[in-house]
Length: 378
Ligand SMILES: NC(=O)c1ccc[n+]([C@@H]2O[C@H](COP(=O)([O-])OP(=O)(O)OC[C@H]3O[C@@H](n4cnc5c(N)ncnc54)[C@H](OP(=O)(O)O)[C@@H]3O)[C@@H](O)[C@H]2O)c1
Image: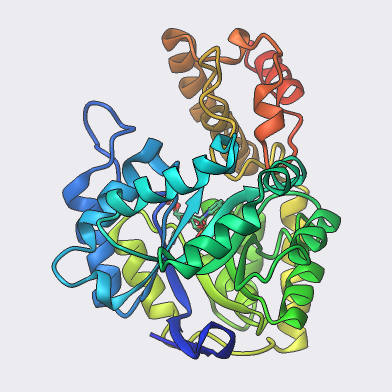
């Protein structure tokens, strides 16, 4: 495992690969939204035993189960071996006292007396306006002073100008941004990462494989990669791209099983430090263009749009549609969509209330896309 020593974090030594606890293994039978506790604990501990020392969770992941399971995984001495990051659910903060109350609840769930990296979660224009109104800086100063949090940070989903506005609003230790070779001009983007670097704010990257989408390329992209003289798997190309920017201190991956974990641990033994050769960067540009011609919805599966008040399975419909679109294979989608119709979670239940679009970090026109998919599935 490779490590970064980060001066702005008190010379903390952090593993370049971080464990994201948003995609923990869930039960194979029964309720598939329930985290498979023993499997998830084994996975988190295996990551730590393999050298990962940065663990990222959040109040909302897996409907609140992620923090509980992560807390359990960090018993038996594992807590002392890691830097722990969790996040304040920005959308639940209505008054100043909510911030202290939720943080205290999180400490209990995580069975710890301090959070090393505490993030305001998925901050956007409206969240930062609300936080400013409620005096979030006082809260962060207070939580740092009394030791409940080590470093004040934010994670971000909005446009580049908003990112810069938030970056300048507080003495942040870290920002967590979505970044991969498909998202260089999306959200904070490369320019945002570089601005953070200039301010000495360390960057933690989320969605380096775009939520798994870049792991399974369409045939055209697969053929390009197989034909290229430098041999890397699609996942290795994704990590190699993100790793070349020195601002990116930790690359989080939401690994869902031990096979993915061991592959990624192996990749991070020899991952490039610093820029890839120009020819390889040009090749990634070509791959990006090939992908862009294939992705239809572009949902990353973060599930911020869920639950839909009408029960529409928005991220699952989008995920399955994009998979089929990329692979040009609608057989699977037809089967999946039929199941949705039976369960009453299909797109026809959408009443266009727009609650999902307000939450979507990718700004996907969800209502329109659902209508289009519904039409194509008729
Ligand atoms: N703060 C925020 O707003 C926010 C938002 C999003 C994420 N996050 C955090 O950032 C973390 C990282 O984001 P992410 O989970 O989207 O990361 P990611 O690495 O882009 O995607 C994770 C997915 O990639 C696939 N994958 C990983 N390793 C693989 C391998 N070796 N081979 C094949 N597939 C592989 C898996 O998909 P399959 O399971 O489909 O195979 C896995 O679930 C999250 O877990 C979460 O902790 C934060």
